Structure formats: C-alpha cells, structure tokens
Amino acid sequence: MEYRRLGNSGLQVSILGLGTNAFGSRADKETSIRIIHQALDQGVNFIDTANIYSGSESERIIGEALTGRRHEVVLATKAGLVQNDGPNGKGSSRYHIMQEIEGSLKRLKTDYIDLYQIHSFDPNTLLEETLRTLDDLVRSGKVRYIGASNYAAWELMKALATSDRLNLSRYVSIQPCYSLADRTIEQELVPLCLDQGIGVIPYFPLAGGILTGKYAAGSASPAGSRADKDPNFAKRLDAERIQLGEQVSKIARELDVSPSALSLAWLMEQPVVSTIIVGATRVEQLEDNLRSTSVKLADQTIQELDRISMPFRYGEPFAVYRLS
Image 1: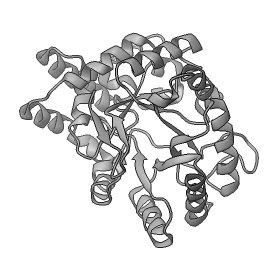
Image 2: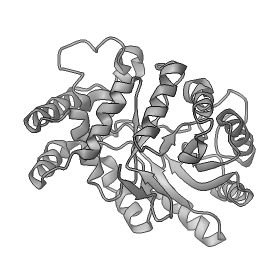
Image 3: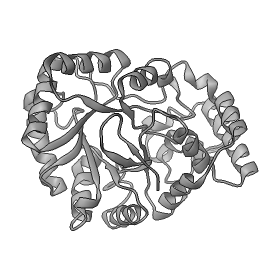
C-alpha cells in the first residue's frame, strides 16, 4: 500500500481510503465489519464516515469494528448536513458542531477524531465562528486535523485566509466529487489546492458505479445497484457518462485490468490527490478496488483517459451537496 501526506500536514494516509456511507443500509453490520477488517489487513488506514450516514449507523458500526484496532486508523468524520429538522439541526455554527462532535465520539467509541470535516459550506454562519470552534476542538485534543467538503474554490480560499489572519487551525484537506466522469474541480479548486498545500480526497471516484462498467446504454440498472435503489442517483445516469463508462471498460479490457482499477489508477496519477474514498458493500468489491494500487499506467494510457474524459472537465458536476 502506498501512503501519502494529507496535503501539507505530517499525516500519512493510504492512497485508497474506505468510504462507509453504505454501512448500516446497503451493507448490513456483519458485512460492514468484515469489510473494515479486510481493509485494515490490506494496509488501508483511512476510514471516512459522517454523522448522517445510514442514520448514524455507519459511525456505530465503525466504532464496534475498531475495538482494539483504533490505533491503526486515521478516522475521519463530518458534520454540517441535515442531522435533524430542528432549528439547529444542520450547518457549521458553534452550537451544531459542538453538539455533533460529542455524538460522533460516542458512536465511534473514541475520544478523538483524526480528521473532522465540515460537510458543506454554511452560508448562514460566519466562517470565523466555524473556524474558531474547530480550532477549539483541535486545542482540546478532541480533533487532530480539520478539513472541508463540498466547498467551492472561493469558499475554501476565504476559509484559509481567515484561519491565517486569525492564527487558527487551517483546513488540510477538501473532499469534492472527482473522477473521470467529473473533472470540474480541475478548473479552479485543483490549482488552489496545489498552491495552498491542501490534499484532495475524492468521493464518487467511480461515479457511483458508472466507471465500473455495470451500466449500459439502453439496459435497465442492475438489481441492487445504487441506481436501482436510489431514484435520485438514477437521475445522474446520462447518456454521455454511460458512454464514457463503456469507453473506459474497452481500455480496461485491452490492458487486462478491471474498469474500476483503471479509473482509480488514473486518479492516483493526479498530484493533488492524497487519498481516494472507495465504498464497498461486499468484500469482493473491496478486493477489486485494492488491485488498483498495483496498476501502473503508461503515459499513452493516461493521455487517452484524459482525452475521452475531457468533456467532463466542464459543465455541471456529477454531484455536490450544499446547504440552502
């Protein structure tokens, strides 16, 4: 397993991280725990979750799975998206953050979070309030590093400048949607992160399965797939991205690798990427994704993948989660 620094921090994270938003929903507890243990045994040290995943069951399952193994893990969680319908049930106010960190610590059965991330930019809370609260958590020892997710480039730069001006803890990472099927962050966010030393942690690196070859034009979504179970996700299956998935699958066959491994290997070639969040609902999925760490792409292959995915550098992103 390859390990990289998370941005300019001293923290080393595995190039593949384990995404857990299906734990407790599309993957039951027993399966989820097996996946976590297998990932750790294979050298994965970065586990990413959030307070809202599977109605908070993801955090509870991770807490149980890490009993006796907490020291092996860089544990990341998030807060900020809607946790409940109360007046303070979302956002990045001091009230909400302080409430949610305690809930996450309890569910995860730990007394510290390695990377605490704001799940989405909060337009209703001053950045200074958010960043002072996060700085307090770092100083208290409950949080070791802080990161952001779903921030636009200008929002991230404003946050970094505020932290620098007030001498507060600085975001070390950003979690955006990033894959061959969504390269929109390359226009502004990637140059900013390279300049400011921020590590990028892509989510949806396989575009929800589009880059695995499971979806085909004119065919129904496979039973049990994300598109089959989630109507909102199914709306993202446009013809252009399905065609891209077919092109990636063709290149993968020529190289005798899986489309998943090929797509992940392309992301690993991006200098801004620190670790890639890959979810799994079966141990076999995890094993297939781990094979990407041994795939070395020739320059010609990288150039061809760049070419066929270039249209997805522009236009609408594949996914972004925002507070209104």
